[in-house]
Structures are given as C-alpha cells and as structure tokens.
Length: 65
Image 1 (cartoon, one colour):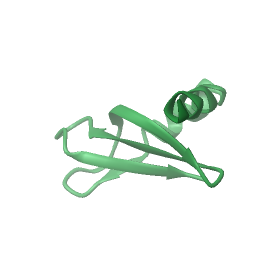
Image 2 (cartoon, rainbow, N blue to C red; image 1 turned 180 degrees about the horizontal axis):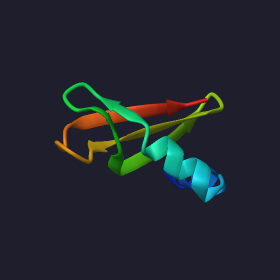
Image 3 (cartoon, rainbow, N blue to C red; image 1 turned 120 degrees about the horizontal axis):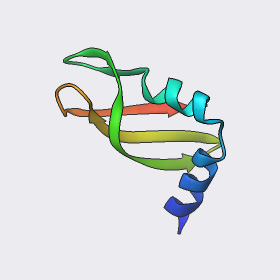
Image 4 (tube, rainbow, N blue to C red; image 1 turned 135 degrees about the vertical axis):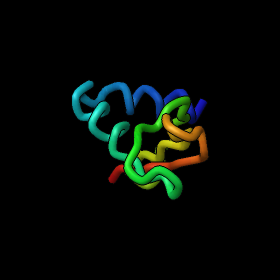
C-alpha cells in the first residue's frame, strides 16, 4: 500500500521534472546515467528511486528532496 502511494506521488510530478531526475543518477561504474526498472519509496518528504543503471545494469539509487 505504501509503495502505491509513493508511486502516485511520484507520478504527480511534472513529466519533464521526472525525466530530468531519472536521467541524472550516478553509477559508480559508468558515472552519470539514467535509472531504469526502478521502484519508488516516499519517506520523510523525499523520494528514493532504487533501480538499475541503463548502461551496465548495476544497482543505482537517487534521493530526491
């Protein structure tokens, strides 16, 4: 249930903002990359995206205040 709420809140952001945040994630192997196949968590008024690097498919995360 909490994941659904987080996803709804994430989707309520403007698509252009979401795209910028998704495409500005740091991978320790590839550097700046795009996050794919991610899950959204929402706690303490911030989003956390946890997923995979588009280039090497390694784990990446992005915290959004």
